[in-house]
Amino acid sequence: MDLNQELITTVVGSYPARPSNDSMARSYFKDVDPFVESIEEAVQDQLDAGIELISDGQTRGGIVELFAENLKGYRMKRRLEIISDIEYRGPITVKDQSKLKNSLPEDIGLKGIITGPWTLVKSSYNIHYDDTKEAVMDTAEALRYEAEKLSDICDIVQIDEPYLSIEFGSCVKNAIERVFPNNTTTKLHVCGDVSDIAEDLVELDVDILDHEFAANPQLLEIYDDISFSQRLSLGVVTTEPRIEEVDEIKHRIDRAVEYFGSDIFIDPDCGLRNLKTETAFKKLKNMVEARNGVLDERS
Amino acid sequence: MFSFTKEQTQFDLDGTKVGGLPGENPTFMFGTLFYEGEFDKPEDSLKEAQKLVKKQEEFSKKTHVPATPDIFIYEENEIQWKIDFALNNISGCFSLDMPESDVRIKALEYLKKQDALDRVIYNSINIGIVQDEIETLKRCTPRWAIVLAFNPKSGSVQGRLDIIKDGGQLLDKGLIKIAEDTGIENILLDTAAQPFKEGASETLRAIPVFKSEFGLPVGCAMHNTVESWRWLGEQKKKVFNTIDSSINCLPIILGGDFVYYGPIENTEVQLTNIAMVDKLVAEGAQEYFGTKISSEHPYHYL
Image (tube, rainbow over all chains, first blue to last red; front, side):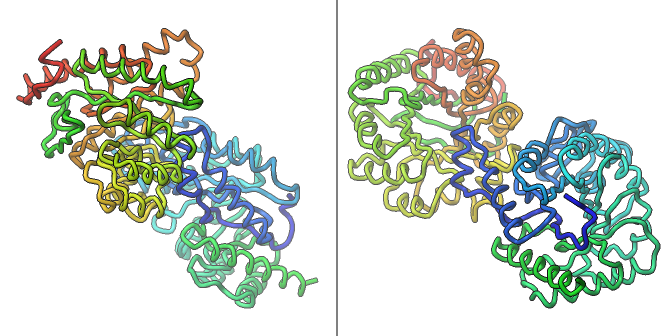
């Protein structure tokens, strides 16, 4: 896919598709993967809505649990714990991405998504490392293997770091840059109000920064006031259940273009996992329609 | 070896107690009959199946390890002849293993018609349960039921605990509560054996956790882990059977109360093996924890 197009529509990652309980139960008795069904549903909905750069919908589990449970050193009890040296065990999302990429039309792009080392460590109770930084850097090193594999398959490798808007640790820059492969387009998604850390974020060696501009419109001013080299990916629909009208979304896109030009990405503020499927789909569809309206007017 | 401070519920399964503290009662064993295409045609299979059931009864008496068949029913057209077979050839209770919810519903209705719900261990109440099945269970309530702790989103003990306790965000309520609300009085918890790298060891670790948390009889079918181990499948049959037999000892060491041991054809080795482990656990529990060993336990006889 050509990533230099204007106003590319994309998603942050998660989508509310899930396999039926019946098919999940069947997978216990037969060697079948019930999540093939939910990935297909998430992908088809994105394609039907007109999204150009899609994800697999992250339907296999929560963004923290999916990665932590598949890295050596993390243990899920009542809480997530770090109990030994953190290492890469083997591919986590690679098989799904590879299968998906082979089935997509050439003009549709695919994002490989990794939950970042800072968020994984800060979501865990560390009972092994003396120094949190060590846990973060070991997690980054482990995730780097996954990122490298994804970079061979996907158009973009994205790291999700929701915890950054709560705390921006001194090791974050090194950790995130450690995960990202050199040979691919990279994106960092940080949700919440990033006003206080925007100046730190623009110092990171990443190609695209992605934030919740719909819920936090003040970020337009914040980013307008600082100098940065990254492209922006702007949330133009919220993750609230209310479905925004096309005109409302179009207004947000128009404002974004006023500030940053058309060399930006358009997406929802964050993952849509917690919405009903119908709601998530309508939000995406309206977003694409709004973007098309903006493009029409510009041409 | 384990003991538990949580009070342990014991159920009567045809005169044999299942559950309780480790070492208190012998392990209850279930051997699979009519698994995937085995004895497809009733007319060809009845004699052979009868022999296997009889052999299981004999070895159960000989070893003092209680056992009964776990009969697989896959399709609706198998319900009548397989249940009729069980009612005519098995002297006590039996387990019905039915992967599909629509088959489970029809089987419950047939069991009610045959007035046989008090002879059945319903296998299983699991994440695939549908509203029709819940309603049917309320009208046609089996005396015992297995609650299967399979959580497709997490193979961790916590994931398994969540699915039976509160639904694990996949169900509105936990499977135990769903079972209780239908009126089922005797619930056995299956920790849901998984293949290696998908939580195989967590299946075992869940046993003492579930016993501590719920005090209900707990068990599993570790045979499924062996069955899914492709490398082992390439080894000699004798090697495979030996490993298959040994893995079924592990749940008991961890405090388990029942075992689904795989093909009923392997009864002789499986029951003898379990008798040995039961004796070991009982001896240790009695000497260290002061556990009282039941009078029918193999500890007293072999």
